[in-house]
Figure (cartoon, rainbow, N blue to C red):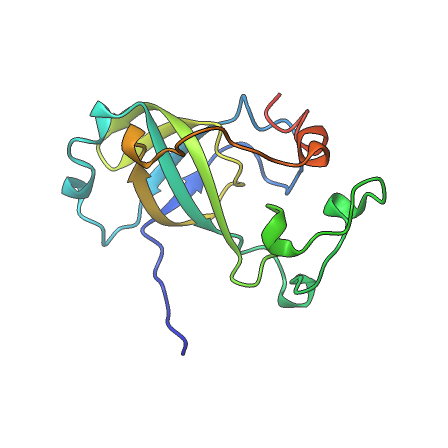
Length: 153
């Protein structure tokens, strides 16, 4: 089975190159695609955070990872499968980030903390609701905390 997805919006920000760290201060505009009705954003300003699903369009097919690897090619981290990490070289090239909604003006959302470069296609936007957050304590391996220490700074 295969299917196609059309972007609903595009990222506009100052990050032009793919980088691993320092995404926390990045402010981005998410601008609806021309065929999207601005009414699709009605009521979104009532939420503090959004989940943004985007497409890693700059990842070439020959870079897709299907096997285990060291995250960021760092041998200090264990080999883990692509589904046990959040690397960009994923089979379907999809990214997911929770962002802070700073504002909404017409067909544009202003968000903070989106780890996507300028021009990235947006696949979907969902409001963060407490009822969808994890129940109980979240567990993760120690290496992932080390890997992420500069990601949002």
